[in-house]
Length: 245
Image 1: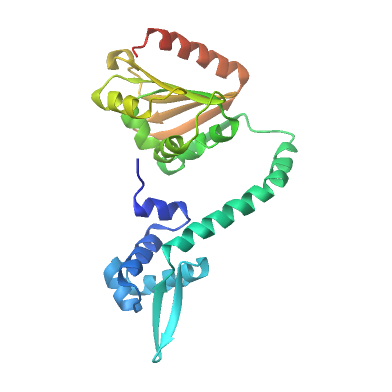
Image 2: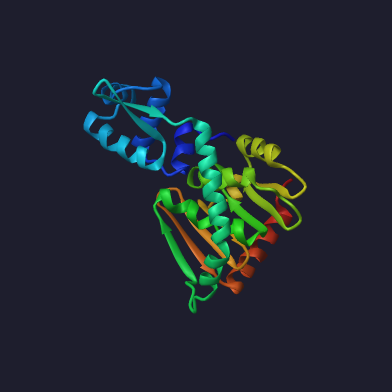
C-alpha cells in the first residue's frame, strides 16, 4: 500500500497548497514565483506566502541573481534526514513526556473524535499499548475512515506481543485484503454481509473500546474501561468462532 506524494508531504506537516508548491518546484528545479505559481496552480500572492513558509521549514532556499529572486527546492533526501533528526529528538524527550503523562491525576475515560480528518487519531494509542488488537468492521468503509491507521498497520512489526484479528464482511475485496495481510500474527475471518448489518467499526485493544460511525457521520467514541473492553472481547470471540476463515 503506497502513499501518494501529497500524503507523504502532509505527514511531514505540509498543507495541500504547500505540498503542491514544493512538488512544482521539484519539477522546475529553480524558478521565479510566477513560474512556480503557474506550475502549481496556486495564485501568485499565495505562492509568495507559501514559499516563505517552506523556506522557514527548510524545504526551499532563496537565491537572488541579477536583482531577481529565484527559489530552489531542497533535495528530497534532506527530508529523510530531517525526519530522522525529529524522530531522534522525540525519542530522547520521551522519558520526560511519559513522566508528565503519568502524573495526570484524572485521565479522560470517554473521548470523542469528530470529523473524518480526526478519526485516525483514535487508533494512535494501539501502537503504544501493543498487545492483541481486535477489529469488527466493514472493510471498505473502515479503510476510507482510517487510511493512515491501515498504512501504519502495514508497516508494523507483528509478533506474539503485537497481533491482530479482524472480522470483516465477506466480499471479493475482503478476500484479497486477507490474502495480502495474512501472517502468523495477523488473521482475518469473514462474516456474510447479511450477518454484519451494522455500519460501524469496532476496535478493542488494552482497556479501550473504539466505536466508529463510518457511513453518514464520521465520529469515533473511545471508551477507556476494563469492563467495556471485556464485554466487547466476549462479543468478538462469539463472532470469531462462527466466522469463516
